[in-house]
Image (tube, rainbow, N blue to C red):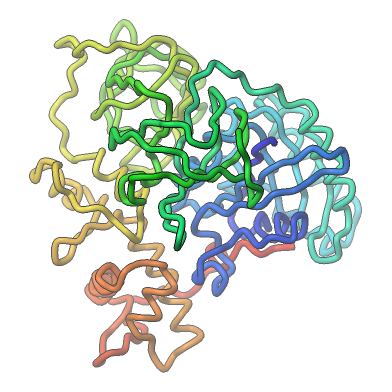
Length: 490
């Protein structure tokens, strides 16, 4: 099985295409179905004409959800890149391409969607040429570009054939006897208990294996093992699997956790080769950055060799000093984002590990804000963790920097509040007579406490106004824009 992540700008038709290819709607949440906007990772299997199997990981295309996109693309071996033929290349097309290039995801097929809406063949030829030009010089260079329309199903057989050929060329994942699974979902199944999902790497996993979780450091038994509903006795590296685990709760293995064979060694200091993207600012000791690896994110300080910043469009050896230890390995690829601007700036691969304490010169400087907690908030936008264990002054600095908001002791990343505002505004467009807390809770797939806290923040910002048990559009309610109106293009 080959894991294939989707990529591309919001509203260019990634989810609709996956649905057309597999018959499975990757949008699971009520809010996603109501709005036609992908908010979370979605999953769907496809058996190709050759008998090969692939597993789609459908990612959000919105600029506020890049952290979720990274959690889906990070562990994937290949990509289905989607561009709307009527709109062409857009901002998130570019950012997603840069991320895939930094992750060295070179196995790719490009789908040009909504081709039935393009009247002139010359227009379609122009978009195809432009896409090929933008891919040149990246890991995706030379990827086949297939014109399709998901509703009429035009071009889908050609796309499936291209996917089959791509999967045939994907190298067999190495088996070092040390399995690792970065968790992208954890939940409870009635009668079975805790289930986690992710893409297996590094080694095989079998029924009744004893594994170790990180960061919980709990030994867990594999009670059940599946791949898209098919029961397995053994799973090989490269397979997308679901593990039914004994003796642990979903809250102890959230997204960003790692499951592996004991011992799971961690380090807070690694050597790496860092490539800074063209057009980005130089990357060095200054600045607030987040390192994304697997499905995890952690605050990081970049210490270039020789003390000078790494300039745009260049690569250089650096030391990465993490705010908290992580279970990293030589060869792991990562992406670095600017925490303040929420932009992708660099990436690379880990070359050396260190288990000792960082020397004085590499010790993290006092932070103005707790970016480790910010990463936790961004990983769980509508179900945020409490700030327990994080320095109060640094958590408060998140609010001062405008990176997070709080009400009644509940903290949210700024992007989560903005995304919640989009959801509530659209609910109100369909229900101008007002919406109740329960409707918002269901749309966001969150708890009543968190829904109330979000609504309080939206009331304060004028997005909503409260009258009794109902919320109505407030004076600052933004108009619904096409940029967040859905990921349902043909």
